Image 1 (spheres, rainbow, N blue to C red):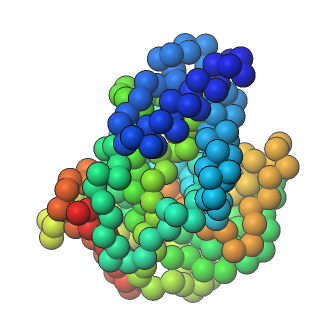
Image 2 (image 1 turned 120 degrees about the vertical axis):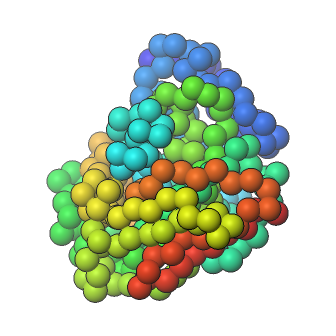
Amino acid sequence: MLSEKDRQIAVDGLLESHRTKVQGRRPSEMFPDIEIADSYAISSAVAAAKVAEGAKIVGHKIGLTSKAMQAASKIDEPDYGYLFDDLVLQDGAKVQFDDFCVPRVEPELTFILKEPLQGPNIGLIDVMRATEWVIPSIEIIDARVTEPRKIFDTVADNGAAAGIVLGGRPVRPEDVDLRWVGAAFYRNSQIEETGLACGVLGHPAMAIAWLANKLAPFGTVLEPGHMMLSGSFTRPVWAEKGDTLHADFGPLGSVAVQFV
């Protein structure tokens, strides 16, 4: 377990990377004895600093929920981070490439809650009952620390959360078999990735259950109205300046974002 001083050094480094858009040193490189509890404490401290500056927490993101993402990141367990109001974008958004360190994008499903969820023992049916809408989305991820990242670094870095683009056709969770929601992911009209939402823990709602149960020891409640980004079911696609990334969710519509 790290000292409060060492945790603060990691917090300061991440906040500086957010400010400058230049990757900083990995917490696991600076502090080889770091534990997952340290990483979540660092992430929470960074979030608290952002809230103090005026940001509002509007939900959570769950990451590394599919075998594809775990293989791409060389990490074998899910993680989570915070979603802030200034990260929420609408379909067709143009974002500044220079506002990121090394942006990548992923197709995902976002769950909007109508009822609170609090673990332990939250399961699939609990999540379905508590969900009002499921929305096709693109997540923008960014690494504020250098490679090779470990799970400690990704967790400390807010699960690499950097943006969420909402679009397509929102659906009620009972109106679609969410396991079979598919996406074809394009960069500048060239197809890059395809996948099915069942790649997320067998059913994307299980990612929300995982988060509720993970947060249970801290007394954290997933709040009504909050957005829950359930995790990618394809590998991430790199974004370069000038690229348009487009996720086609078939009957659920499409979502696009452009880096300018």
